[in-house]
Structure formats: structure tokens, C-alpha cells
Length: 190
Ligand code: HEC
Image (cartoon, rainbow, N blue to C red; front, top):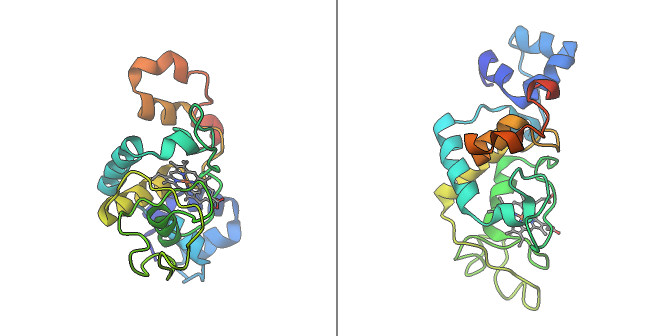
């Protein structure tokens, strides 16, 4: 059970705050059987891992298809990736999708060793023979862990429209004017 402070800082806590029952339960420190997704997003992410993960996000190929804010607004003529703000998977599932891709779709595998053994969904090359498999920019397992920390902290569960803070963090102060077109974090209740 994460500390109350950690719960408060998480996006789950923001929705939990609206539920007085959940809030009361967490105040008395009762153990709540949260579904795994909620538990994962409730867990406070290590800030250093989140920062490293942000660097991975910016340096990888994700934004081309999922958009700089992960909301599914692809850049240029890339295939369109779904919004990552709307997903409800726990971190280990996100990590597997990132490293293993989704055979048969435009979601690339980023582990260079994917499907050389059964590390990906228990499947090998023979199992996915004939299916489309894109190869993304290579990524280590450590980078994937950091990237997942970033996604859970700043992307997953956020409103689909990015806010000014997201924009400034991604593009920097030089783009302040451009970022003003987005809503403030405050107006999103963040
Ligand atoms: C070439 C385009 C492309 C790139 C690059 C790409 N994705 Fe995807 N991604 C997709 C598509 C298309 C899907 C939907 C796959 C399907 O139909 O199941 C997807 C699915 C996903 C999903 C599952 C979402 C869901 O709703 O099922 C996650 C998580 C994800 N991508 C994360 C990433 C991350 C993180 C990166 C960068 C490391 C990345 N993607 C790079 C196109 C891309």
C-alpha cells in the first residue's frame, strides 16, 4: 500500500478523492483490494525514473505515431497509433507491448531480441510467421522500465487534450506562445 502522500499525488487519488468511500477507507489505512490497473497507476513513480523515461519518450519513435503528448495525434504521415492517455493497462502489460510490439499491426517491437525466444507473449518467430511485424528503434529493458514510469506518471489516465505544462515540458519555454493554445493544468483539475 503506497503512503497516503503518494496516493494523493497520483492520478488515481484524484479520482479517488471524488469517491468519499474510497477516501475514507484509505484514511483509516484499510487495505483496499484495488484492481491491478488502479494499483499500478496509484503507485507513485520514482521521479528519477520518470525523468529518464521522458528522455526515452523524446528520443524514441513513439511520438511519430502516438503524438508528442501520447494522445494519438500522429506526426506527419506516420501510421496512427491509439491514444496512450486512454489505456487502462498495468505497467507490465505496457512494457510487453512496447518491447514486443503487436504482430499483425503497425505497433513495432523495440526489443531487438523479440521473438528470437519466447520472451514475447510466449511466442517465437514460428508462431507469428506470415504476420506483419515492424521493428522499432532498439530499446533496452531498463529504458522500457523508465519509459513505463514516465507513461504512468504523465500520460496514462490524463485528459486526452494535453495541457500547457505538458506542452512546455515537451517543447520548452521557447514555444510558450504555441503552448498557450492548450488548456491550463488547473482547468483540467490537475
Ligand atoms: C509506426 C507507428 C507506431 C510507433 C512508432 C509506435 N506505436 Fe505504439 N501503437 C501503434 C499502433 C498502430 C497501435 C495499435 C496496435 C493494435 O492494433 O493492436 C499501437 C499500440 C500501442 C500500445 C497499446 C495501446 C492499446 O490501446 O492497445 C502501447 C502501450 C503503445 N503502442 C506504446 C508505444 C510506445 C511507448 C512507443 C514508442 C516506444 C510506440 N508505441 C511506438 C503504432 C505505433
